[in-house]
Image 1 (tube, rainbow, N blue to C red):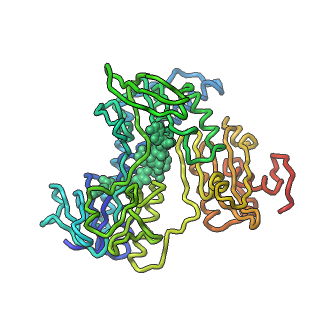
Image 2 (image 1 turned 30 degrees about the vertical axis):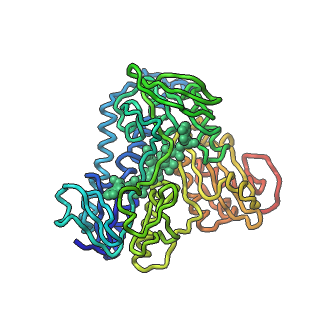
Image 3 (image 1 turned 180 degrees about the horizontal axis):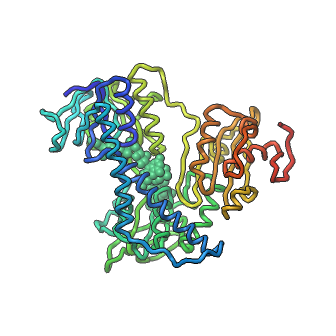
Length: 476
Ligand code: FAD
Ligand code: NAD
């Protein structure tokens, strides 16, 4: 079987590429090793974790009603099998939808593990009925979209089902009494939030001196404060796990560091110390594709690898490993293959950590700005001054802009607070459009909403924020 385009991997990078290519008139196949489309994001990542985080958020809000608003009712109970089934239903609905969309677009789906025989041929491993006779696919172009896998350092790989990666944690086999999360990054904090709200006593051990090392500290602080309460002060920074061993139906963990030293036991351990690109064992050595020392496919700004027939997108093509980055890169790769002169030139890739509070940022971060030595101004609006935040009882939030002081252009934005992940979209548009502070302060934002804090943080820059007395500049 021959196709104009073969996409290896059916995640948010792969299916977005295949569908656009089909819309542009190409003959397309997706080769996906799993029985369902959707990739990590849909099957064991973004979507199931957000379904469970929804439950966690509602449980936490219910608790707040009882404590802060005098609403009386008995403590909620839940059935773990119903939670699990509901989460599965969400996945099934979306992956079924993708299969339908592929069919309507005439995209051939081959369920097989693809391995490159050379720069124009993919060998198909497996026994699924969708594999064409001869077990091979040839192509004019191929997009590598094989994604990434959880990193499991060999010291943690002790062969115990009690030691889980994110996939295991999302299966929600039970609600353990105690759980240690190794790694205070995106997955550790999101899944830690889920389990803690479902009743598990969660502890977090983080190698560096702060949670979410990539995020600005003023954004992390309100989250850390709330997590200290949720995790009952069991956040161990500057600490590493020396060894894990299964002992008497528990996992014994050896800690080494200033946050915690010695041994402790847990019912389950979640290892969430990062992800690695899925680029090994797929015959890339038979092509001209080059990998960097971490295994990411090396690409140029048009998603081209060193092999003229092969493009790479998504997690396998480098950080940040985010679904929306994968699907945007998919558009760039397909348009380049279609003959358009486009490139991946984004000023703002949003990042959202779906904890409570959520943390979101886009464009330049304050730590990056400081490191770069470039001139910048940073202006923050505390949510304690927002009527909506006070009404919600969530004055712990903060919205800030990074601004070019010479041009008044918006360079970056950071938000912490409930709903930050939705609010950041306005900042992405502003930064991508090259907006100035004045554009945001002169746009009427609906009242009372948390979106006003984006406008208000801009007003702080001019010293004219209505709810804050902080006169300073006359740049209006
Ligand atoms: P993937 O989604 O990893 O898809 C790759 C596909 O390729 C897989 O289906 C795999 O089976 C297939 N494949 C691999 N090798 C082969 C082969 N040789 N032959 C055939 N098929 C193959 N990102 C966000 O933006 N927001 C979030 O909220 C978010 N939450 C996450 C939560 C968790 C728990 C995890 C683990 C990740 C999360 N991510 C999130 C990251 C997101 O899932 C990834 O960035 C995204 O899935 C990358 O898309 P991709 O298309 O590059 O690869
Ligand atoms: P991560 O890079 O976000 O965090 C890993 C954390 O583990 C870091 O803080 C790191 O310092 C720490 N660490 C590393 N080795 C350690 C060790 N031996 N002991 C203790 N701590 C250690 O990685 P992750 O949480 O596994 O997530 C992987 C990727 O998946 C993320 O980087 C992100 O790209 C993606 N993801 C995104 C979302 C989202 O967009 N909301 C959610 C989940 C995952």
